[in-house]
Image (cartoon, rainbow, N blue to C red; front, top):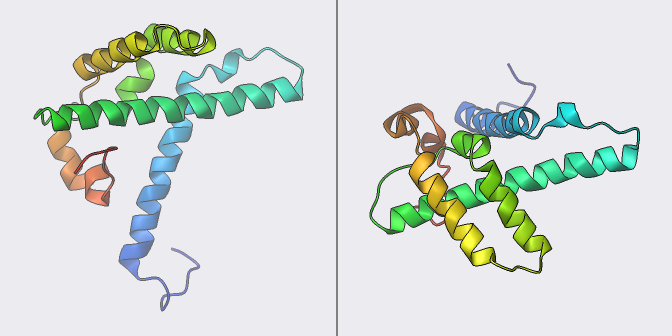
Length: 148
């Protein structure tokens, strides 16, 4: 059910919008599950807002890097898909090294990025990439950064 005008929005468009909305819900779930919001121990509204905002930045950066790994695999001839869910759950120590490198004026930044991307390339492959073509993100036309 929807309150959208049937003349302006056909059923397939409404379904497409709902599917994309679900992707946004999944991002919120990842943030809540893997950002440690339950561990924020502060009475400062400003600090809390900053921590939540930074969680969004980290999730966005991790997703972007996961799609970069996917594009790199695609360009190298490998047809393996990367799971953003597995990316969120793994590589925390390596991602932390990347952030520390940024804080230290980029010293060893390239090395940290290579280690992290190689780790995800080896350990964050999707379990059922064929299923995605039928019911998942590729059916919606969502593709990786640099992907086909």
